[in-house]
Length: 369
Ligand SMILES: Cc1ncc(COP(=O)(O)O)c(C=O)c1O
Image (cartoon, protein in one colour):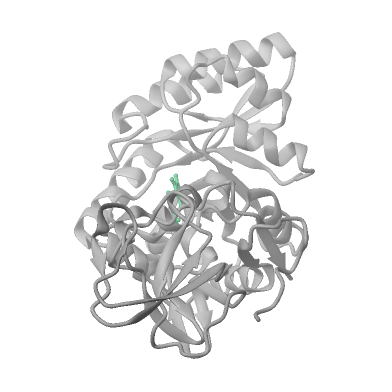
């Protein structure tokens, strides 16, 4: 029999373990690679890429390893404030509808603006509340998502410079190809620099995600914005999340036995099939049907048949010792074997961000520190 889940606040034995000491180690490692004085905005959007935003943010804040937090929406920022986080929080995503500026300001979040219209609407909110408000202006340099064209940025800056309540605290852009294309990245940085020359002095200029900050010293400016590396799914950093479950059913089947919907797998030999209580509703992609792996008894066992909504089957024939109640690992290590989010992403033709961000709210997060 394997260990009991660390907390008895759930019965179904499927949980994600997030190691906060490794998170801090990754933050320290990242900081050590940056020049001193460069601030670090820890990107905790999308529930910290599935790792749990409040707990990850608290670990970073309490150890003073992050200066800022980054979220994608006002809702995410409000959630962090309600969890007691006091660090400055930049809302990276589009704030449309502009009514959301009101909530952003009330909860002490720093909005992104990306047009003259958004600057005006933020100013109206500041006037209505009679409060000073900081904002960051996002410049489009090649990502093609949100951002004002460099040539139009000066107009927004001029408008804000005449406003008593709204301060342009930051100017930033986002790199589209930091991992894959040096020329493209350098061009983006050149466009940002050109825009910054026209804008003049601002306290915080920033551009770099994990890959940008690690690979291009010219991208670091006053602040870097890593996410992926801090969660450990980047070369030189340690993954902080493991997805674990237990065998809940084990059977011996004769050759030819079909497994799961569509009978896409049949036993080629007398086999032992283990059922795991985890499925695509937990974030185990159906694309792993007959392609993915789980660790059991310290060995890799293939996922056989279709991954179903709530359960996934393994061929455990080669793990003679397997028993109901044994621990199985879908992401993470067991014995000498490891299945990383990066490996799963490769199998699925996606990126590790999607693998961890897909772990659903049904899976309890257990924090180790
Ligand atoms: C605007 C912005 N900055 C920074 C990041 C962090 O990127 P990474 O996780 O690659 O470090 C993201 C993530 O997508 C982002 O959208």
